[in-house]
Length: 189
Ligand code: FE
Image (cartoon, rainbow, N blue to C red; front, side):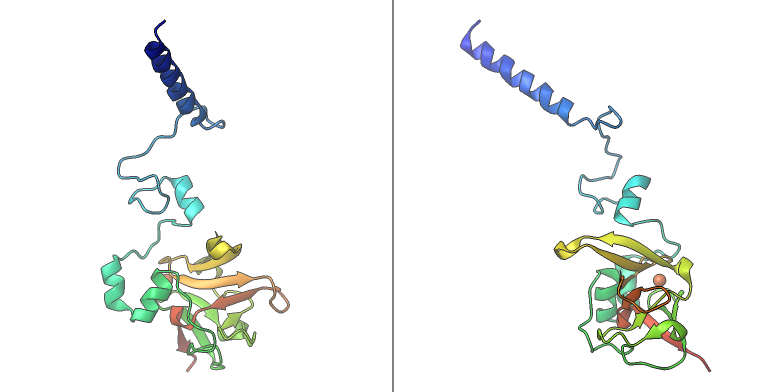
């Protein structure tokens, strides 16, 4: 066999070997991209159910375009709730607030936390030892910035609220560390 044919044969063998190794061992089938999907998770407009679970991007009851959220929210609220930002400690309007009432989502108005479960954590962010309306508060794994944390979002609209840590007071031992910009206090009259 001529050397050029040998090289061609070697290239074809490598190509097929490469394809075979890309087949997931669990299914034995090559991954398929749905129409409209990109390879990068969370960027494409359409995601499979399993991808949504992985990224925490479950379908929300309240859905608005980026432009609609921008028009509704202050620039700080938009950056924190829709782009997963964090306000500086000791700057938010609620970290030192002791008024009674229910804290609602700044984006969609869903009831999230209550002054009854709020406490002074000393962190500089409003802190709660449990959500007031559990079904409206979702938790997701967050590995951004090289840290392993649990992100807290509004389950109705997907707004980023903050994170939950395991160093809270009794009885739950949890600390829901929430951005003031993500919530609005509906004061008890
Ligand atoms: Fe919301």
